[in-house]
Length: 57
Image (cartoon, rainbow, N blue to C red; front, side, top):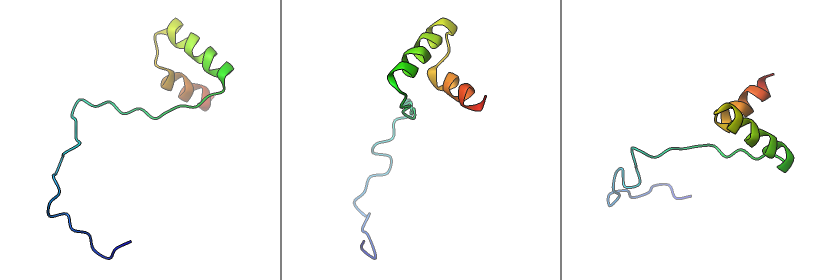
């Protein structure tokens, strides 16, 4: 790593998008993923919420 970096030609906020949505990827085994997706459709809930509730119980 360099001791100093020159950011004088940098552009602040170049890649910022106010409407962007960030989601952490969730990696599940295929059979668990299938069950979770089925439950999300039945309960009209996002898979992240179900996984977090499942993990906490």
